[in-house]
Image 1 (spheres, rainbow, N blue to C red):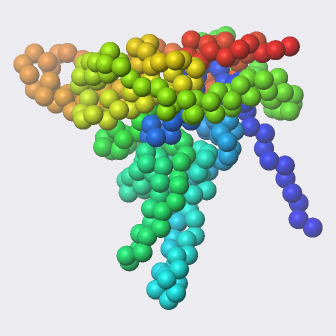
Image 2: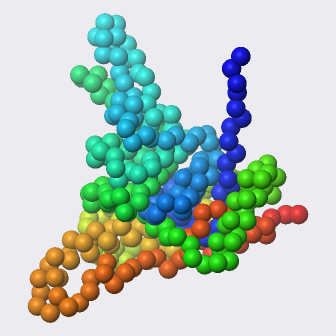
Image 3: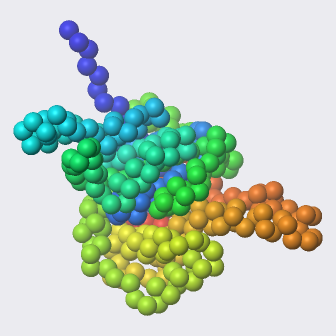
Length: 343
């Protein structure tokens, strides 16, 4: 008689602490997966996978699909039975991981170590919401609307610049060295490990609120538009960052609209744009700076000036990897205000 195991309890999204920028980026991608995925960079132990699993639980399908590093392209996109197509003109399609992730989260740990070809396929599907498989003149398409979350440890290598730019949003996590935050994280983790059911019950109200807000926001996207002031502000930010192409402008507008929809706003404002700008520009600004650095170093007098990398640069925030105070998620109210937990 085979032994069955109960599914592992998921740490609640509303219980994450010290991760406001990451929470915001994940929620924006959940509201509008067409943003193109979230790239999360950070060292080990910053709970990148914990946050990804927590987000999946808030989505309609609740699916969490992991792409293994050694996966083949067929396993990712699916396969077609060409013999049956030639024999009786029927298309027999064996779904891949993209099909299984539809409606949920597709998680890629160490995405920087994946072959470039697989990353291209992932990003194409994440942006378009459709996966098309073609073999010997036979093709099959299916919906593949999912939130792509790619994580990487920068110490293990970077993504090719052309691929990095195609991720809609990026967040950098850091180890937390703030004593009170570390203590809160550890206490909540211990409480969850001791009695996961009780811990999840404590955050049930906030979890339900997130689910409802994501559902409402997806519907509200179509009624929100951008006025000329918003367009001008987005253009100014992207020009100042020196980004290549127009992808940053488009992603910033979509991200600002998703944030406005999530907050039940009547219009997209400059404030919404400002609050999403860093996650849109972080990796694209870096690409521009990396491209310019050799030219700057060749100018007279530059040899004595430390580069941005040498001087040290990091986002001004502390990151933990788990829970909030019992009072709710007040730590992220400046990003996504939700009602206080009811007693």
